[in-house]
Length: 127
Image 1: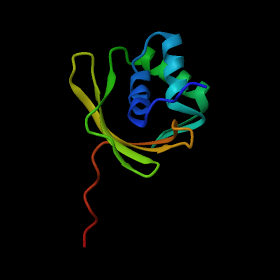
Image 2: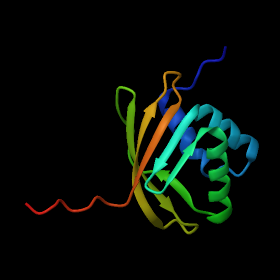
Image 3: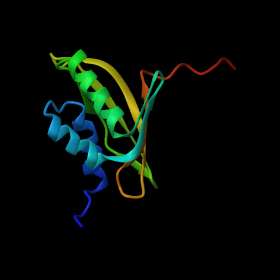
């Protein structure tokens, strides 16, 4: 049995899969980084399992050519939870969106769940 990559390598593989044009390498990144029963959630989307993630990455690469996510912070971990900030760059390298991911790691060291928050937080409610 081969040894699994460490947490940071798994997280980097997850980010890298969103820009990988080669289908075989993309599939390998999905299998390395995401548990089979993974879930990726955002305000207006939910992808469950490898097949749905692969389909969404294919859609992103097709519909938004040249756009790419980049990690803009270190990985901050507490137990099985990790958070980090991200930005999406356009083909010229300009930042078009920012956010942060909260990730739950599975028992096997891969990602079980990704919760992505896009944009800045709202101001606090009036006192």
